[in-house]
Length: 86
Image 1 (cartoon, rainbow, N blue to C red):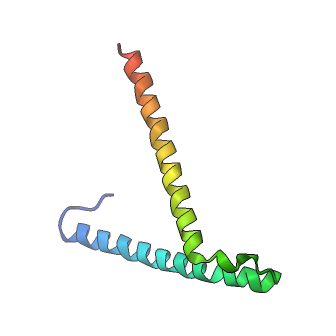
Image 2: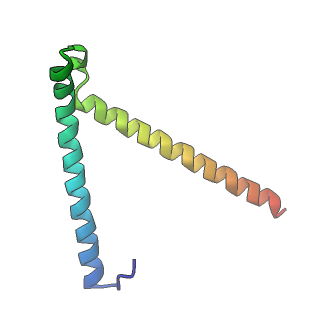
Image 3: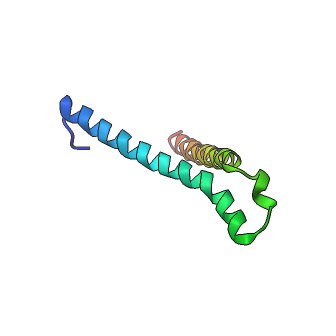
């Protein structure tokens, strides 16, 4: 947004990618620690098999499902517009 093509664009993209990498690493770090922390606080061993990888897969599936539902709703809106212009 409002960045001219050339070096300014390259710098902008680099900055955005660095921020995303930092946020992603922080998220993965929290994801790895949370199951152990919950187990330590609650003294329940229920979370022993529910590790960070499982949570990461669940979040990925939920995100993908939400994205697909949203795209399906958008397609339905286009279908309504198509009907309107016939």
